[in-house]
Length: 207
Image (cartoon, rainbow, N blue to C red; front, side):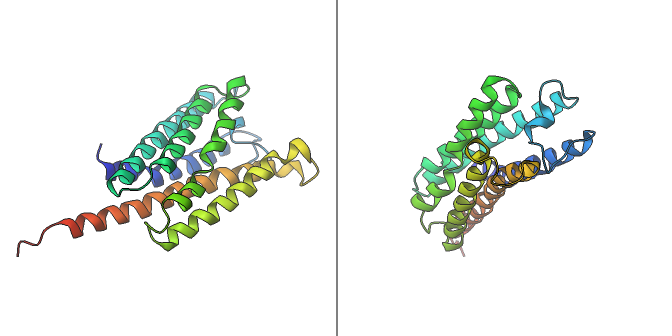
């Protein structure tokens, strides 16, 4: 698959995950997007166990391929491949979460592995600097700040369960997940634009 096609997977996987999990949640009787986690849609015993596994495994594979595309793009532009590797780690974690549905012990282990992937916006900010433009640089920093806030709120029940009403935990988790996937779409847009611009300017003028 060509690098440009791999880069397009960023916005595709964002749409697939956000719309897919939202649609499946609506199919479950008495399921609440506000209070319940995404994993509860496809937990063992759920009527959507198999469809949710297919969705999350697909998302994981596509994220890994997207990371490979970002890595190829980085090499092409002589940029650090480190941020791309962290995107691939997130994809691997998503794949593991899909294979080992809740309440399997490995489900939470792969959930913790996702934390490494959440640091990719910071790495893009630090290592790619202004290579995709100042807007991408600052979007990366803002995304990382939002991600850190999301991680803090997601973990807060462990040390401060009264920080916010737990009936809103579903929104808190989605805030973190959706922020990351929207950022993947942002990477895709900026990288494809830069790739296309480079390709056009690299074509020799034979006129």
